[in-house]
Image (cartoon, rainbow, N blue to C red; front, side, top):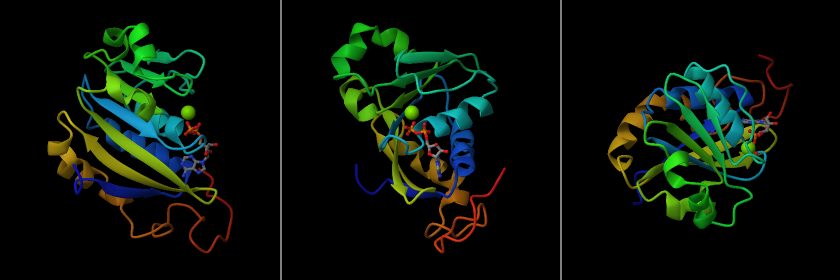
Length: 184
Ligand SMILES: Nc1ncnc2c1ncn2[C@@H]1O[C@H](COP(=O)(O)OP(=O)(O)O)[C@@H](O)[C@H]1O
Ligand SMILES: [Mg+2]
């Protein structure tokens, strides 16, 4: 599966929301996007950007205590947080057909925990934190339709493929570390 993945860079929360919004345009019912990365990486921020772009003004928060939240958007969005789950079996207990509804777009935070339940294919966005506001995101396909769509994804996210953090004048937080984060 190697070779298909690519990386994008976020320099701010606003960038991460814009990445989510851009990604949202390419999602269709049945799409499953798994977010991986540490606490505070920006997984929920990315989902916020996507859900807003899909036309929902529902508040998007980590569904840690609910396991799955549903947003009323152009296409229904399911937002799963697997942080407290021990594995895929626990997700299956609450009804995989409901959670991974083929009529919905599904975002799964901590997707690695429930990977065994995502056998129909999913797109991983792995977020690595670099300093306070830098994020390097690796986009990689896991089966299903995603391998064939990597070129399309890469083109859509081209604006975020700078060589390194700070390449784009999006915020004041480049590699020099000078200035405050851009207000937006
Ligand atoms: N480039 C960035 N992208 C996303 N969030 C960022 C970025 N820089 C700083 N942050 C901050 O990091 C935190 C990310 O929180 P959240 O999205 O809830 O993370 P997660 O869901 O991965 O635990 C927020 O407080 C946000 O303001
Ligand atoms: Mg979260």
